[in-house]
Image 1 (tube, rainbow, N blue to C red):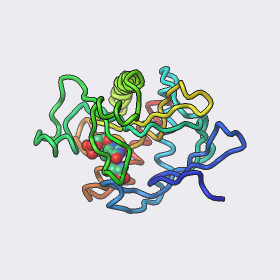
Image 2 (image 1 turned 180 degrees about the horizontal axis):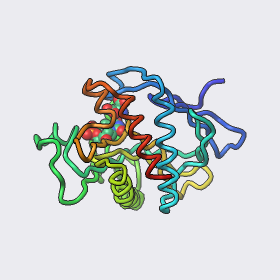
Image 3 (image 1 turned 60 degrees about the vertical axis):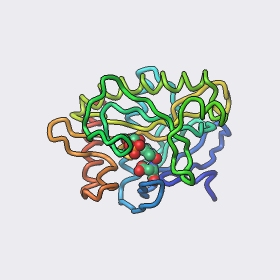
Image 4 (image 1 turned 90 degrees about the horizontal axis):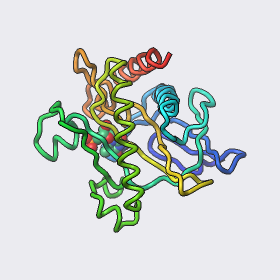
Length: 237
Ligand code: TMP
Ligand code: ASP
């Protein structure tokens, strides 16, 4: 069997239901658009467990998502979607590429969250784009983009409170959305929500508990993910 799609951290497989796919979490880690690569034993299992709990929580909070059910440690069932080629990033504090681009020190708290967009393309290096680019590139209509922005801010509110209960500061994160295969007028949250695509800092110590540990060679990558899982489990129990 060959997957329908293989990305850097996941594979998508067909199921008997044409509107449902199996999403498999791999142990591969990449950074800087795939330039830096490694494998971490258990990463797929940990991200699947974290993402499944967070998706369940978001659904309970009324956020429509692609999530159907967890199959096993490595796999979930998701609704088939046509992924929008625009990534939506929300930032509560300065970090990462924001700090690099602006010279603002990491950790500065924004008065309101920043929402930004990039094209989902490793070949182009996920370039930052604005509303006009997205309209002219046909990545989303202005109405769809307004929906993405509002949804991302809603998710930010829910997850900021949720991670605070976990003793973690939600610094920033990336979301992806897709049009349902069975109803393309409906856009839902897709992809995973895990320490791969969120910056999470320990509220007490400020310690980084996310993929920056890999990006910056800080060590203890899986130990941090395991700790995030334990705290997410407690917060959802
Ligand atoms: P950045 O500061 O590197 O732009 O990243 C912002 C957030 O988005 C951070 O939490 C990591 C996440 N992210 C991804 O999940 N995938 C990506 O390709 C990039 C560039 C960032
Ligand atoms: N997700 C991107 C990559 O894997 C960038 C990153 O997360 O740093 O290359």
